[in-house]
Image 1 (tube, one colour):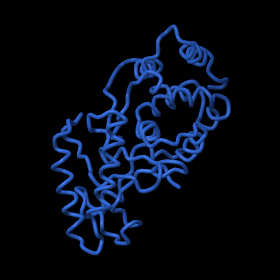
Image 2 (image 1 turned 120 degrees about the vertical axis):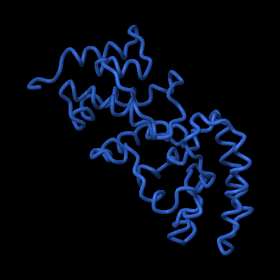
Image 3 (image 1 turned 180 degrees about the horizontal axis):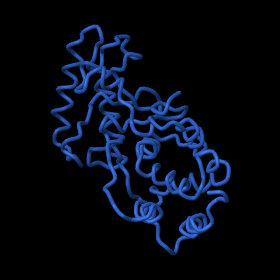
Image 4 (image 1 turned 90 degrees about the horizontal axis):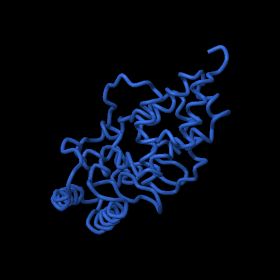
Amino acid sequence: MSLCQSKNTSCGACCGIFNLDLNKEEINDLLNLRTSQFKSDVDFKNKWTIAEYRKKREIEESYVLRKDDTTYVCPFLGFIENKKIGCMIHPSITGDPLSQNFSFYGSSICQGYECKNKERKDIDLIENLIEELKIDSYYEYSNIFSDHITLSLILEFFNSCGYDIKKVLFEEKDLFLELLNYKFKKGILLNQTSFEFEEATELSILDRLLFRLSIDLKEDIYKRLLEISKNPLRGF
């Protein structure tokens, strides 16, 4: 298991699929179409069929609006297992360590890229905790794990109140998970690509978190956050 391929599902945000201006159902339909076409058209013994598949898909998908014209959308992302998406030309599938050279970025970048969340030193603790959300959809999973900005704000908020990650997971686990999952309640910050960055601001960490998740001051979750901020851990 890894952050990219969890026990029940997987993340494909870095492949650009969520850069397409499509809703959840449309993205799912596109991934099914890619997978079906790939299985039908590609023969690993005839490498030219891989290049031909990419060319055909890029032409067909060029008509789909992008949220960001500079972010590439790789057509090799598809279903590799029942509920898991992944690279259909990954070496573990093709048996060729350089098979991803048929992609836009090439093998070295595809295999070497680490998103900001994967780079976190405590990501194993966070990953194990998120398993408790029992997410079995690549869409929800990708939109949580690729959103490094929201995760950073949550961790930074707790840290500003004297909590390290272990303390958060021990004493405020439910709140931590609620904040991570909060975007789906509001229907915001969806279709992440893992390449986003937070604009500079002079707002406090609490205000940045409230703004990021569109938390209203009348909501109970705000009152819980405010209480923690007013009562930091002793010795902090």
